[in-house]
Image 1 (cartoon, rainbow, N blue to C red):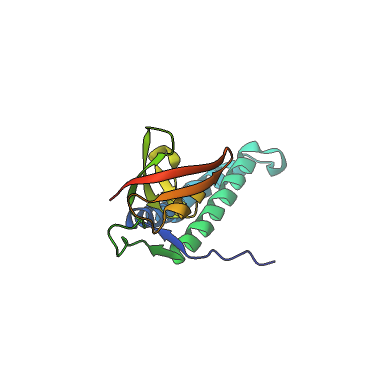
Image 2 (cartoon, rainbow, N blue to C red; image 1 turned 90 degrees about the horizontal axis):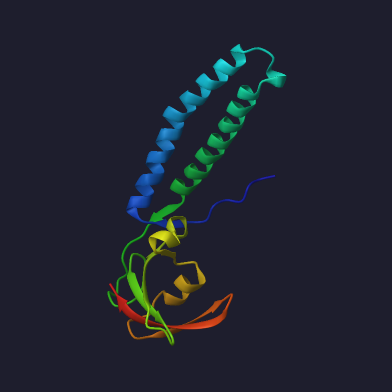
Length: 159
């Protein structure tokens, strides 16, 4: 059975560099560390009841899976460029929005799916809110379906 191929992933230059660096680290440093752990665990004798050996094998499998995932992501990544129309919400835009009937504003950076992180206020262009914001301008209203029902937001600022 063939695994599904990763579609094009849009990332910032910073995220792309981070993935390449992690991939290099895993392939060189981490693989060597795991090989040493496996060698040591084998030296302890009976592999069937050797918890250290099993742990090292599990770590090896997880590392190889991560390497495979990163290789696919790097291969299919496209580095985002800022939008052509400065006033429109696009990749790399900082967007300030305000929910209807609220005075609180929220600022988000629009990023690709791999970089999304709500703690850092990085919003994926694929999320319901991110998708609704894409291509819009300051002053426009958007409606987003949420678990609490439809929410209406006004775009306060795009930079």
